[in-house]
Length: 102
Image (cartoon, rainbow, N blue to C red; front, side, top):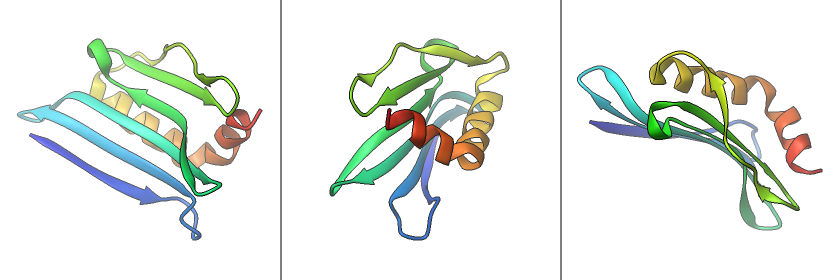
């Protein structure tokens, strides 16, 4: 089964969190949590968390250098990683955007 949703993190709709996942029974088998920012009329990727290859990975993006190499960010299962990624983005999105803008 697959699912997903988009959260608007600020009222002006320029910062969004896109969450998608796949499950088998109740176990998350893959996911993506993507923090985006609208700049100059274009949606820019700021941070991606995913469960590729069964590991909780995180990719930082920068405005000037684009996608950076994957880093492991959580040692738990993919469901725990997905929830941790969502919480991190919701709590720290201003800092994540600041890091992207460098």
